[in-house]
Amino acid sequence: MLGLNKNKTKVVEDESIRDKSKFVVVGFTVMILSFLLFFIGEIYTSLKLSKQSSLIQGTGDVQVQADKIILEMAKAGKNVNQAEYAYIQEIMKFMSPSEFQNFKNSISGMASQFNVQINSLNESKPEKLGKKYSINFIEYQFLSTFENLTLLKNKISETEFKVNIIEEVILRENPKSKKVLTNGKIGVYVFAGKEKLLKEKKNIIDQFKKEEENKESSK
Image 1 (cartoon, helix red, strand yellow):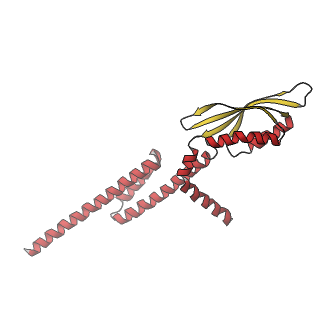
Image 2 (image 1 turned 135 degrees about the vertical axis):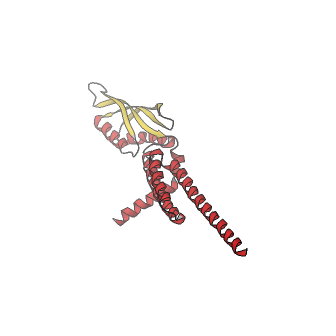
């Protein structure tokens, strides 16, 4: 009787272990599905799920499965971070609202540097680019020699931001004058949420900047 009871106990324990193994496999599968759907998108997700499904079906060792899936998650996470950093680098070329105001104010100093007289310098209605971005405009009228006007525009173009002269009309001040009267509009790409985004992504930015610095120092 005692022997039979021991055998029954062993059977119950074995079934319990198998049930737990199934639970772990299902748990890891759900976790990976959620991770990939959130970070990578439908196309990339479908590829990853297919690969992970074959890993789960191809081995009976739950620990091996777990190790492989975690490794895939790490690789996917690195790819996501790289893509996010590339996006942040593009956002850095947009001005925040405060940077736009600083840029507009800096034009007066640059104009003075090249002896360009500013007759007017005003903001006009921005053009919305979706919900997050816009092109902000600065309308201007300058009076200067053509050479000095060219020097001023070259100086403005040195900015690291996305800035374009949308339209410009240059006329001689009068038939006898060496100066030209210039009317134009500068378009500046602005992202209102830039400062918030950079604050939220500070860790990623610092990580990749450190990697870039290390690469430069190793050259």
